[in-house]
Length: 341
View 1 (cartoon, one colour):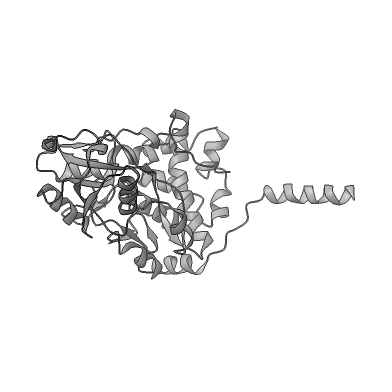
View 2 (spheres, one colour; view 1 turned 120 degrees about the horizontal axis):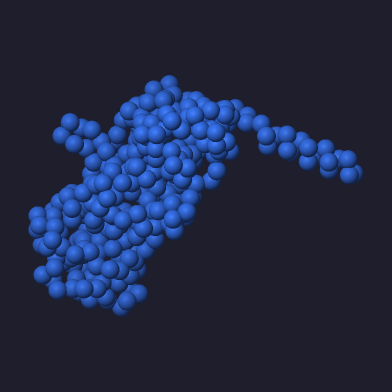
């Protein structure tokens, strides 16, 4: 009996040390045959996903799409972007119109189960807040009894809003508008007293859309947990793994000091973990079913998580949002990637 357990233990250790090739599912096969990733993004949120006058998309969500394309094809530009509203996004993913959603979507139990989706990580830890015009004279969300509130339908924002006012025994009048650009326009035109969405969206809206940004304040209360992350359909575990580990690779690279600028020098590192992450020591690419240079391609073309955060929403951007909860776990934040090994 003891020999049987020993044999099983040896077999388990042996299997654990061998990276076996991953097998592609139908979703991944279709994406590879097409030669392009189709990514559902927002219709335009500064810092997260927005297109310039030439049609070039940028943002922290866009960088997730680009990282996945870099892992799959070795080319971060092999992405087609499909703008989706909050109400359209899930239908677009369920129907196969897009391969992946990366558009400020909150990770919840029902979305991860009943809708037939898989969330593959969190690329931005957020929470819902409120923005008002300073002339309203309000300093706290607890002073908003009877206010008119602009909100998008089909969102966790709409549900949280109702819960918050009910819990605090306050009333409000919702002004429900589907398209985010029309919500902003209504708020700045004075059709509602309050605009509510994720705090990141409030900062983005104030910086990019307010006629005079200094006229508006974001109230101190954060009323919800909004972990935002990429979403795929149930059914193709390997594609979900590639999306998941592309995001983890960006976080892991930041932790080990690997950047888009020093990555070629890092390829010469003697650190066994860095050698494994960058494919100098092979095996991780085979296990995931992609090229051994998958992390190199992501970081060289897109950058690590910190680089993406800084240029899109952080201190290197017009939004200047502090890292806060999105700092690495080694610096007191929540961003933590399982090891690439």
